[in-house]
Length: 163
Image (cartoon, rainbow, N blue to C red; front, side, top):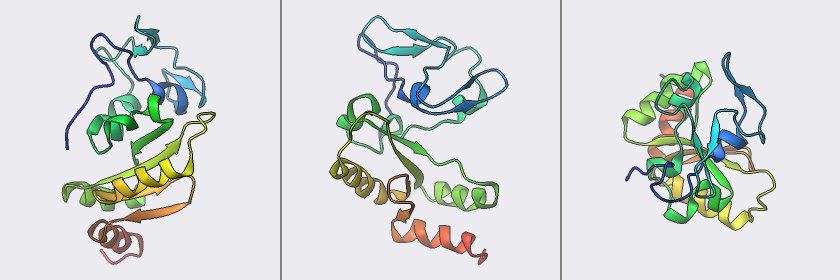
């Protein structure tokens, strides 16, 4: 798994998470689809966070993009594919299951089509199948959880109380 950066040198930065996701924190509040007030033009047709290295809110520091983490192909960058893949932030009762899945070297990912991006279902299914190989996937399109056998055994053991 390679690690990429949404802050590209000499190219447009991807900031779809800062535009398409809701942020409801004391210092930054914004609905989905509205650019974060901390975004600035990067001079290359994209956006960058003006407080990235100096005091981003915890929700931003804890956010994990699937493309940046390297679990997706190059062409699946959110601003190009129209799909955000974010590491799932679990409900409290499932946090330990998610931590165990992560400790096993796998991820738990949410697949979120960007509103208005007109992403075809084949692309969503291709991305979902790719993610399943490395962990569990929670999709917005087909509500449910998918994953490889090991991730799903861990997840369901915790979900149904068989810790």
